[in-house]
Length: 485
Image (tube, rainbow, N blue to C red; front, side, top):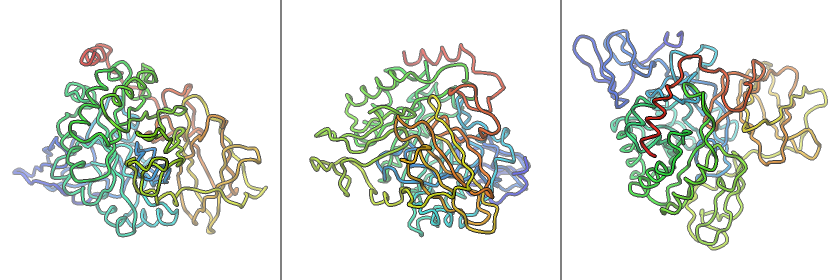
């Protein structure tokens, strides 16, 4: 891949005899010979020194909503700038972003270049106050994350880190001072699961999560429940029990719906009733804030006061609306603590514009289908003039337009999400000088690489492109299911 043509010195290096190096970023502690790369495929050995091939290289930056990252109790509804890189120190058999997380599958067209300064400039210009390090996994983007996060904090921008946290204690110590919000994905409280389905192991993840909590960072935990493997009652009890014992009852826990992907295409989305049962179990065990993820039209995604039952935040899919919260994060009805913070960031939520697009603008429409309730819109303004595009939730005049300003030569990607069950689709209007593409999002953590103009999946279950390699054997699925009957 051409992205390996440029590189720079990496941190967490241990030099060894015979021109070998040890990478102490991941618990794998990869021992790398000269000219080779480690497990992640994006860190390697050049002339006996540890280097990173992806400093400033990643997928297209994307404006999204903070709920995309399984963060419900920090600035609900706030816009974020999502930043994903390429490569990963895990290889989960169900990865929804395998096309970019596994370096050998990465295509040059999906790789973009940034500097820390350009990212901060983009966030400030679009009035975004949270950077989110996300998608494949930010662990292997370590040096670039830290350099950019430092600048973000100086600019008054928060840093959110969404990760499986398969990371060494040394690397986490370097990272912690610069990150404000952590969304940690714990796959299962089961060592055999980790070994067989993620190619990693469990203890470093648990150790890192405990250290994040002890450091006083805003922390939320998510658990992807895999159909017929980890969507059972015992798995839910194991997860809730670990959070209660090692973190605290106030830490939000998200049980997330799985969509078939990568080497696990031959199955179905997680049945919602199993997710709902997991939520009931976790609440009965004593957790205060338990949610479902990747499920749109259900009360299980909204926040309610644990004391008086008032609805604090109403959610539909990725859309959030404050209902009964004080500025200090307590319930407006009974004044009890509700464990919310940074509500002042709601001034960064997009607002409708009084202006309308010109009648000469080109119009694009999209209709929601099945479980797909959000899309990425990627737009480029190739002209030498600042220009605006507009979007709204339907073609009827009762829907107001939202304006997005584009700088000369700017390429920008942003998410549009269904906000209520009555919405049929969306409409976008832009000058004919602009170019655009739509990408269907199958999962809130999914970064699509195939636009609808290039092709549309025949269902709402598995995205394009489909992995053409071997699927995970049925006997392995059965052996894993037997672990937590």
